[in-house]
Length: 163
Image (cartoon, rainbow, N blue to C red; front, side, top):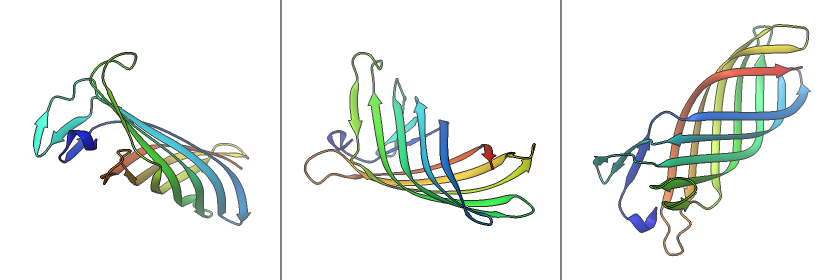
């Protein structure tokens, strides 16, 4: 958002979806490819320290990269970490189909850290709960001296593992 100038902060609830596919390389050790994204409609916006109406703002985030998980057995408690390439997009004002201004970042780096617990519901399926923290840093797409967009997100959700 470099053409807007100043310092902007956005916060609020977002939808989250993630998918990982991989396999066990040793007892309790999983390596996978992880794709995830988040989207927020009308997040709370603070511009240069002043609150403002969110209007029809939409914020999106997507990332892909390798994931490492470690399961502590037999408790089926796990820790996970992903280092990924990420991108952030923002649309201010107007509907998605007309009007408004689009902003986006260059591809940057993101990290995600997870902790969770699963329970076996069959011989092959574990279902559970997990919490995730995502951090991201991406340069703006502007051409001269681009600012860096930084992000922090916390998600709580369900997990399902096929083994």
